[in-house]
Image 1 (cartoon, one colour):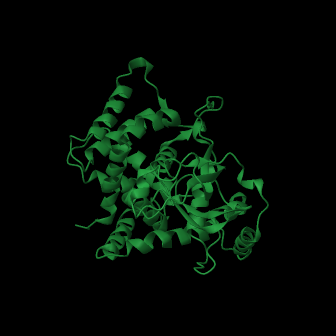
Image 2 (image 1 turned 90 degrees about the horizontal axis):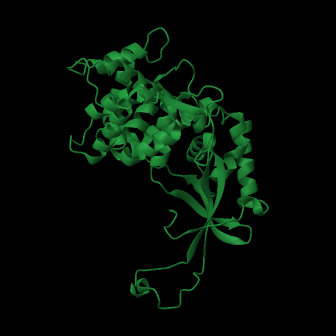
Image 3 (image 1 turned 30 degrees about the horizontal axis):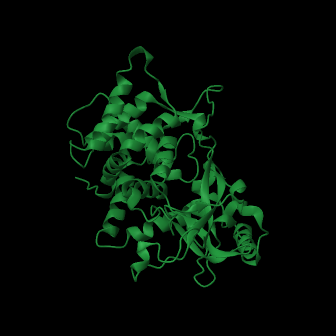
Length: 376
């Protein structure tokens, strides 16, 4: 289900009405999952891996790609720790460039950080990062598939239900979009801002509005026959869409998404617990420690990564988005003595938004190397 272009966002709080029987039973189900030890970090990541891998295996080349990812992991792992070696990771990519670009080590260090962050997603990475085989598989699938992933359908999974006296659709899970990718890319590159320098403003992103319930009501000021669409026999106007939303902590939104997308048990008859049911689990699990405005990206790290993505561009040198991205990078480099040494979330989001398709397409192309790796 999608939020329609003319939808009305309800001013009412989702908690306005008492929890009904179905929502109570769903909350009780999640509590039973917790009591059985199924909602730990390890169990959540295990289910997330299975959820990501399952569609990957569908198709002619799926098993071969998964096998290649595992082979790459064995190639770049540290035999002592069993985790990806940062040096082996860099050597793996460096060998694929004929020209020893001076900025390449810095760019590959940034790329390693991106992979390490996504290997722990939706949880914060350890310090130092520890990428095991399952984490590496998850990171490659998330980064190489990008918006082609089953999670990036930009809509909401829903089921029929009630909100107080209103009948409609309860949100089961939330799809991802480009804003989610921008948030995660920023987090994977950013470092905590020094104390006293992280000041929020009107644009600070602390919460995200997430739909909880959809209902439809008669349209106002729309007399019968007024709409040209009514002449279309296939048109079925069920009314004005009204969306009831809840403001969720941005640091926990991704975690709640994964919890609802990857339940411990699938129940096709009575439906899985809706997304809201997993709120009680959030305090018991690791969460992202910083808000976006409390973090910043070293400008040099971002500039080097953009150079790498430009080299990995699969769309050709005439891409308008690529030009936008490179122009922004050049502006940062030409800022002279006043050049910003760090990029805030607001600056990053504003600039990347203009060229996000090119950026994530290039990042997908770059990390797809792990799926096609052949030991020569």
